[in-house]
Structure formats: C-alpha cells, structure tokens
Image (cartoon, rainbow over all chains, first blue to last red; front, top):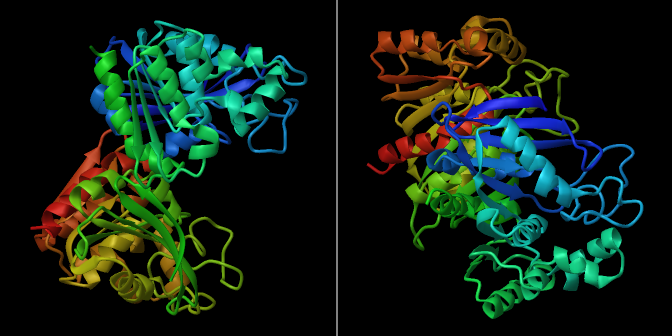
Length: 277
Length: 277
C-alpha cells in the first residue's frame, strides 16, 4: 500500500492510499480518515460506498464527515466505484463502465477481467484495512449514496452479522426494476435475471436476507426519486420482512453532496451509537 | 444578478450567482449560503475571502461551514479572487494575475482595467448582497485564507467600524516583506513601496489603523509559515498597537482546506458571538 497524501484534519488524519488489487487486477485508490485516538486503540469502521461517476474524492472533499468521526472515534473508509485505467474496459455512458461498477462481480465479457467490485469491497479491501489501520473489524457499519447506497444495502444483506449498522443516502433499492440497474446488471451479469437477485436489496430481502434495522434518507426534490430510487419498494420489502426501516423523506433536498453532507454527520452518530454499544 | 445554482443544505440554501461587475469590467461569480430563517428576518453576514488559485468553489465545496452557519443564523459570502476570462490580463504563475488579485485596486498596466478587487469587495459586492439577500450589513464579520486572510485583515483595517469581527486562516500578514506579496504588490501597484502600505495589514496597523480584536489560526506544519505568512510580524504589530490578537498555532496542520475546514465552524461561532451580541 502506497500513501498518496495525508493531512491533519479535525484532530485526526485524512489519508489517500493506492494499492495493487488482485480482485480487480488494477491499482485501486481509496481514502481513510482515522480520528484522534489513544495509542494502541482499535476503532470501529464506517464504510462509505460512493455513487455513479464518483471516486473516493467526492465524499472526501464534500462529505463533511470528519468532525463527526472525530467526535465519535470512528474510522471512515471511502473506496473507489470501479477499476480504472488504460486496459480496463469502459463505456461512454456515465452510468456504465468506469465509475459505475455497481459493486458486482461481473460475469459478462469484457467486464469479467476487472469489474470484480463485490470481491474487492467484501473481501480484499477489508483485509487491507485490518492490516494497515487501527481498525476493529468486529465493529463495522456501512453506508453509501445512490449506487453506493445500493452497494451498502446489498453488501450488508449478503453478509449477515458482519455489519452492526446499515444506512443509505438516496439508494437504488431495486436495481432489477429501474433503468440504471437494469442496464448495469444486464451488462455485467447477462440477461438471466435470476443472477441479478443477489445484487438487488429488495430481492435479497424477499429471498430471506436480513439486517437488524435500516436508516435511509432521501430528498423529496431528488430528480431520480420516482424513476431510479423508489424507496417505497424498500419500505414494502422491509414491512413484509419485519425489518425496522427508518425512511426519512427530507423536504427540499436533491441528489447532490449538499444533501449527503447535510445528513452524513447524523448518520455517523447513528452508526456510532450502534458500533460502540 | 443571475442564479447559477441553488441547493438545499443544512436547512438553508447554498447558491452560486453571477453578475456583471462595473468594478472589474467582467462577469463575476460568487457563492452565498443563506441559513434557515424566519420570513422577513435580516441576518448577519460573514465574508470569506479565498486564497491563491481559488474561486468561490473551493470553500463552498470543502469549507464545512454550512452546519455552523445554519446553527448560528449567519449568511456566508464567498467571492472570487480576481476577474477572469478572455480579454482579462493573466500571468502563467499561480501567484499573479487571474486567481491572484490580492484584493488591490491595480494602478499598473495592464492590470488597471480589470484588477480592481478592492473596489469590488469593499463597495460593489456588498451593495449587491444588501439588495439581493436578507442581509443586515450593520452586522458584518470577515475572514479569509492565505491571500484571502491578507484580504480580510486589510479590508477590515481600511474600513474602521464596518466589521464587528475579523479573523483569518494562515494569512499573509505583511505582503510588503514576503515573496508572494512583493511580487504581487510590485506588479499591481508599481515599485513605490509607499503605495503598498494600505494593502499590508502590519503596515496599516503601524500607520494607525485599528480593529477591535483579531483571531488568527495558522498550522505549524504549514509549508509557507516562515517565508510567506510570518504571523510573528502580526503579533508584534498588534502588541505595539494594543490590538488583542488571539494567535493559535495549530499543531500538525498544513495550508490546505483540511486545515481551514477543521476550524472554520469554530470561526463562524466566534464571529456569531460578536455579530449577535
């Protein structure tokens, strides 16, 4: 692992790092904020998965999470959203290819060789975080925005018991039935929709996957609310499965980081309450 | 004035605006955050002047001020650092020309025609803010970063009584005697150093200008600390003039927005205490 930059911030250290990923077959960049802590302490970890077009940098620059993480003593990890670089397949669209990995392990050519973001996020990067940072992986939470909200929900649902706390901002809750998701899942996984279900939060819940509870914020002025996000489908799935869902429709907020940053500190505190219980 | 964007954030509205400036003879872009407030209320205003290479966007994206401004009920105004565009003189260096207006009214060719940032910041933009936003200009504070810290200090010192509160982050306190300042002031104002004094915070204080008190934060890992910033010169000038200066050397912090954003909410609260007294 190579350190690209570190800056003191809110008493802790915001770093950006690069490593050679075996999962994606590329170099991958991610950011980690380590709050001030006692020497030798191991800290809970909050994962943040980003949305379409983003890298680690968007939330690192605009997320306004460091103060809350410093107050709560929580490590904040922000991975990239796909493999990148020359030799990595891409697509001209903003919602497919580089910057749009959808946190799946692709099975369709030409994406199989590098687009293994599920394996990267679920297995490889946690091992690196555990080895390189003062992280207590017995206390993990996960959140994310839009495509990354989809990522957070599905990673948590597929790995019961791993995360003590799960939340999301404007998540794509049912990619199998919305345009962004149908395009991405067909492209990476092929047309057999049975293979999509493990990458669809609502389908996972209907198929029996469970998390203890969920916190979801969505802006009611989000232009993607009704066509791509459809939080009512998550509400219905959680109701049927008796998963307690706190779904907050935030009045006047859109899909931008102005929305995320308005509530991310609140999510950090919500996770911390559960991670430190 | 044209609205380029607005987003709800922390209960208020973060906007970006453009107007045709008579002072600079160009279009100018600035950002304003208006916190949640009662209809008809007039709110105190905190000005933030940015540093070399910056536009309004740097602090708007990375400053982490909105939560504090929402809590305190303070409007936050972030102007650009120079005129820009085709037909506006420029220089290849990052520290002169576009992005580096140094908050002076240039008197040297070719800069005179557009580089009138003192007039823009001191006269024209406040008139626009008063006309277009729920701003109470009887309650103004000012701060800034680096070149913008220089701007904040000198604007306040030249306009006694206008600002109830003045602070700065890593300011250039004595541009007449440091490389950034000597280059810029010679370029914009010519080689007669007497003309530089009204744009030098330490010289203004030595020449009799006063502010009620000052708050200044500087990182002790700031790479510009000893050559360009030299806060000890401000300390000496304030000591001689009996201006109460709270100078905080922040351990481990550098010159970046990771430093600014770590303490900007604290400055907002410090200003609000004085603006709402």
